Length: 512
Ligand SMILES: Cc1cc2nc3c(=O)[nH]c(=O)nc-3n(C[C@H](O)[C@H](O)[C@H](O)COP(=O)(O)OP(=O)(O)OC[C@H]3O[C@@H](n4cnc5c(N)ncnc54)[C@H](O)[C@@H]3O)c2cc1C
Ligand SMILES: NC(=O)c1ccc[n+]([C@@H]2O[C@H](COP(=O)([O-])OP(=O)(O)OC[C@H]3O[C@@H](n4cnc5c(N)ncnc54)[C@H](O)[C@@H]3O)[C@@H](O)[C@H]2O)c1
Image (tube, rainbow, N blue to C red):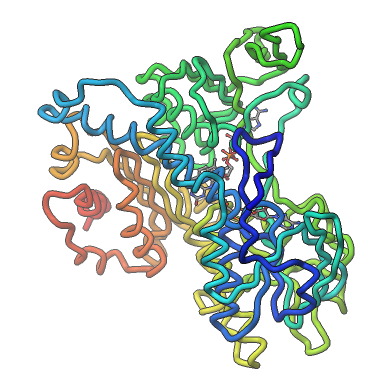
């Protein structure tokens, strides 16, 4: 097992090579997957399940961003203080909370969820699932070929009998702020793997990463300023961002909306000039924000830069576009299909630019693994809307939970998206105030929006904002994906007294 220090990371990475296969030993496989994040892993697993052999080429840690620097560590940082906040909303329980947050224990629990940045467990799973794992940097090298540069610098080529799948994820995108590239700062990797809680933190960017981590670090003890160029969570219903901004402000976060950062600089705390002192972010109005740390969370872009897409005539500066079965589009005529007349290049996950979320990427991955296997067996492909090989939910029913307190939980279209899609809609809004929410917490505040397609009388979008609304999401997802007529939804009776009773109120407010 080798410990590999990387400059962008506060912990050493541990790559267990006991069960991986040297690139030089692999010359051919049915499916070659470049990138072993959650998405690449799922493509490979489904392809194997379909009777094919599969190789994953992974450059860093098997499990990808999600396992080590994104979903898992961020949620591990968030959950303990959310439980504490929940207890504090309940007289009787509140009195039992006498101490303060043990940040060190929270960080230690986070470390256990990342397995100490050791991917041995994931490699073990993959090998147990009959997937061959190769360490190295993969690049498409013409039709059905993947060139692998191994960690020792040697290069070999793997031939894919059926398909190559690009699942290389995404990388952070930096805004054009003077001095930013030369100033040491945190990205989401450094924040989610932080070894300490800074006394003060400026967060630039108020999307999902910015909001979740601003609150997490504030609750762990940092004095936090959140700088947003727009509103908070601007991809959600506007009310969601307002409610999260209110909650953050109430907890002492300095939220600055519609603000642009113009320059960044960092002092040194000693004479070696290594820029480890306070960081200063200057805003367009001249305000200088000084803090121990700066987290830049201004979005991510598909990782297409060094994947060899140019060898098949695809752009290296744009998302890898795919059709509804995950097959790459945009290949020159004559090179999109192999000699057997089948697509050979696929992509899934963040690299496609569509719904950059683990669960949505894994949904596409399952379809991609299955469709490659179906095509290999000469079976019919079901790529019509909601067919077994179609990724229809990616267009119509993307689900997401933003794990702030209050949680923002959504599926399908926002009211604005439904309008842009040309639907004749009716929107029902209400505060979440049912027996279940009142019992759940004193002073429970929440909000719900249901977007109805009036022509079909089905729900096309739902947003819930409030503590513990995440577990309500699947009910909304079933309603949207099932295209359940409102009159039938009326018969889905929420149990008393649960927060789900909000469904009854929404349907009553609609007029049922
Ligand atoms: C802070 C943060 C929190 C998040 N929280 C959530 C959440 O709670 N829920 C959620 O659904 N989503 C969350 N996301 C989004 C989620 O992390 C991504 O959508 C998900 O990781 C995408 O999976 P992927 O497999 O496409 O890419 P990745 O997880 O990025 O994996 C790509 C893999 O490919 C490898 N790779 C890249 N290029 C090459 C190459 N040329 N050769 C070989 N290997 C290569 C990388 O090393 C990596 O292992 C979060 C993101 C961030 C930043
Ligand atoms: N719970 C979850 O599901 C979860 C959690 C974290 C991340 N993610 C995923 O990861 C992806 C990346 O998240 P993210 O928050 O980095 O991106 P994002 O696209 O959600 O948000 C980026 C934010 O940065 C702002 N911004 C851009 N340039 C700026 C500038 N110069 N100054 C100030 N603000 C600026 C944007 O207005 C936007 O609000 C998201 O698309 C999300 O789907 C999901």
